[in-house]
Image 1 (tube, rainbow, N blue to C red):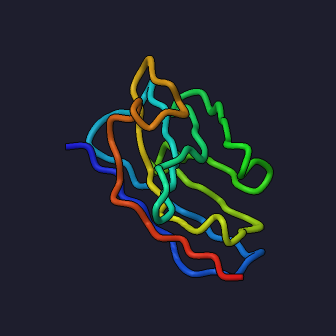
Image 2: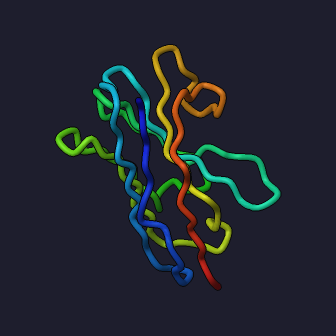
Length: 124
């Protein structure tokens, strides 16, 4: 079965960096979009970044553009989210997700598979 397993979250001071990893397994992801979403307490889950598995095309939410970088390693079946210049408002549970063809890449509802999430806390 398909599994997405996030890791790399933790506590960091404002201005610091973290790299999240998403280990994907259970199927081939050609034609898929891989995404990162986040959810803060009391808030809806929101789009952060996405990358096409096969084409290396990326897209970012305005709130993280210029600070976060999404990438993937085909050999390791892993998607990464490098987060720099972190702000307290970045504090959330971060989720890795995979969306099949015809997906709206920024839409939660388009994603078929989700990881369990990893907590990122940014202190001021």
